[in-house]
Image (tube, rainbow, N blue to C red; front, top):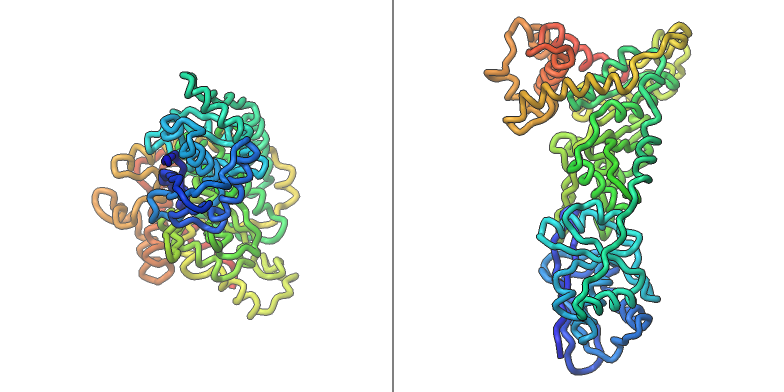
Length: 515
């Protein structure tokens, strides 16, 4: 009896590990055993594979089949191993050329009629195969466009297991498995143009908030927009992505790899626009930062990687949900620990919070229309106070738009603002690239407080006084310095001036939810 070996990929977060799918055909009673820490979906593979092979004109029912997914110590999840298990079994039985199937990575679920079906996580799996030096992957037709986003691999496909057998039959006769047709990029271009229809020029008035958004985009800073309902907080937040620089290919693939795990990858092409994710305020901790029973899925903060995470009505989110964001905002990643594994997802985001001044939303200005009791306003303000708010660099008031502002000429477009942001980011890159940072918001505080980057005491006098009076924490002190450097970059100054420090301190303290 023979042994058949082919390959699959086991995912842990967006990191993939190459797996050898080994099949041994023994003598004895019919059996179909899978070892190597399979989950429930994978333990059900025998029923799907048996039915699919019968539909392809073969039968495994009378065989004693033993499968090992190596390395066996890594947990295996999902139905993406179905095709690899079937191919390894047919190779062990002599129905497929063992040498031809061994180096190929197989990623597809099998239907009972033998059809190859879509599986989640194809993009990170193919990226892992590329990093491991593999040269060919075989995926379902629905996953071809996603797999082709990765360069340097030969992507093949088939509609059914029977076609897979015929394709490998060509290799036995000296041919090769036919590659999949190249997907057209037209769909990606249309989607990108549709996503960019919103423009910062659509926002009437709100000059201070617009300036704050530009500052946030230039340095990668977090923002709190505080104002009454209807003042334009959501419009402003939605337009932040239109002034951010386009993603690099590597960044776009990282973002799409996270989206692939939840089945939200575009049909073709790479979307270079930063993602914008806005979960509802009823979201749980698992929905926001990731988790779940069984397979650990990415949350909203990871889906917004290299983009914007917008929490509208932020004070309505649960306290535990908001506090769960503290660690991802600091480290740029989410670490989810389980008994058998530890899953890491990327979470380098810009956080935008929007909140009303009080529960009824009318506690602005003189607050004559406000119906909230003082205790209610204090409790509402407390939801956004403390450690989370201390990580928000820019806090800005968004007042209601006046009639005069409504009829003003349109302000600068997103394209014009984005150009200024690009210039400021280029200055930051030149300054910090040698140290491994790209943005001012990524620079550790102690670096900015020591030579050669320490500012003169005359420049930081106002900030030093605020620290002595307890108006800012040490973390807040460092964040004001980062924001001051960004303001200097936007204005073309080599170092921050007292005006830049004062502006940064104002944005740091002015927009907190009123108690």
